[in-house]
Length: 401
Image 1 (cartoon, rainbow, N blue to C red):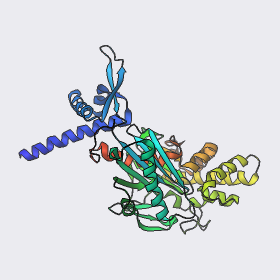
Image 2: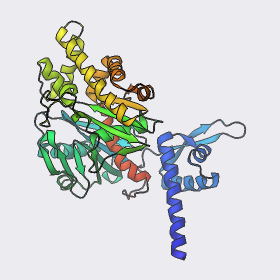
Image 3: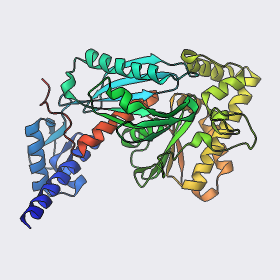
Image 4: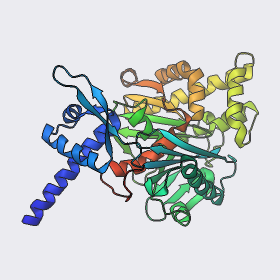
């Protein structure tokens, strides 16, 4: 009975600590009073947790704020020098590695080009390992202060020691990405689908803040999505939910990279858009080429027609999500999604309206992502951060100098 009680007290302290850390991380700076109101914990409980976090160096006082009478309140924030997290985006045209401090401020970045038509896993692994070394060296951070590495990968991940990746469009079938990377680094690794990491970033820091039910659409060379139900990422039975790019929009339509025909990706992914324009591009040209197509729409009937068709298909795909899932928000991101949405968002919204039921469409907003093309890497970095906030002690060193 005594052990059970001790365990209950320990669990309560852990839960209180996690609640305070989460509230502060997502809403800093905050005072002790703010944290008490946000978490529902008593002032005494918050004070005890904050005292512990200050002693450990995880939290720091960052100034004073006026209060409604009485003395000013001390404002609290995460200590940016306590530890660091790294996010990796295995994209279709590049591998991006970024290092962030605990305020999610970028401290270093490395990028490596990829051929969108070839995704040799050995090349990708070498790029990630080189990127980890580069951002640690460039930031001047001691590796001992790195809490962990999050990796946003294409396709479906079987979580486990090997982190098996299945990505039909890359030709990856049960690729043991985790095992391959752990042969070259001792840093703690966390894996998730890249569209889902972008979705988490937008929900935590960007266009999804405040929403409980949302869809975050990633458009790059291909198309993916993240489905958020009641604040939680929906994954499905085998973590392959939200393969939005492979819903069928034209029966018997264009050939898709997945081997099927008529997929949304075969009409709305950047690679497919450029192919229809007659401009298949190499890895380092896709973004520039899409920009050129957008610029040409004012003078080229072909460019204008392709963009109009793209907006129609994207809107129809979004309408399917609205009719099926009834989200509060649909957020359009990814490098190509931001380029297309910046020019075509009114047309995309109109197409979605035409293809949606009136009532669910009226309850949904369609917006651009707020975090830019680096959202996948930022979201990937939240994977080790999530474990840290929940109580994982993966980093033994004290605060950095």
